[in-house]
Length: 248
Image (tube, rainbow, N blue to C red; front, side, top):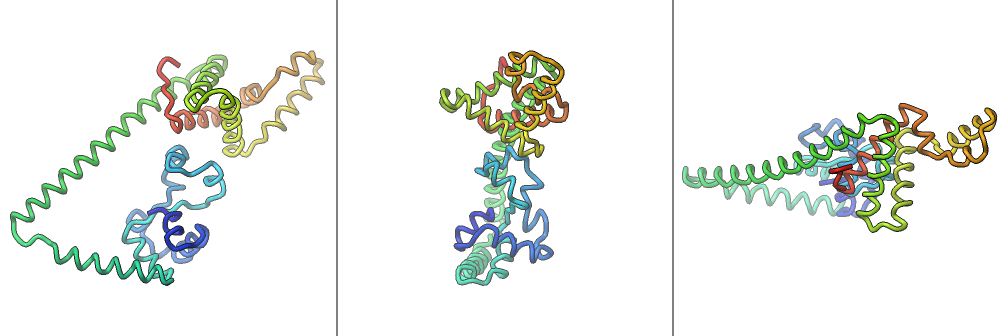
């Protein structure tokens, strides 16, 4: 269960729940009671789970708790809702104990059911992995392109994303989103860099008509690190919006 869901159940702020967890962090076992998705998952995966770029920028931790971890948190919260849910967990535990298989036939039936469920889940995971790998292969080809080619490919991908969400104003919105993500990821100000680039060109005697055509993509292309981050950002956007990159 995600902390944001726990906060909603208990009528508390996410920050309050995170603070209680962090104050008692030593009581939670990593990978058993709790996982910090901010450290263990990609931004693309988190955005698919409904977290916005702002959420990712301002959150130090994005916790998900197992039933075992949630039971520990209930002991820490100790509000009326926590005690109510703790009672339910205890009742469910003893009910589960009373339903344990008593004969070999029951044990085999239960084991067979568990194996079928596990196979079903593994099949779903493998399907998602194949889809992700296919998308990653398409993006890897883009990363290997020369500067002129990658700009064309990036524009094509951004246009595909815009078309997938309705076209029109989306063409400008998608490009703005890509620049905002870049600035947040690398702590850059593209507007400042663009102003500096135009100023330098003016001092070098470049014609005003040429200076006026300079844009953010030119600024990005000037810096290898900035280019690398931008390609990563567009990759994540392509996966997030599930665009088909065949033929790009």
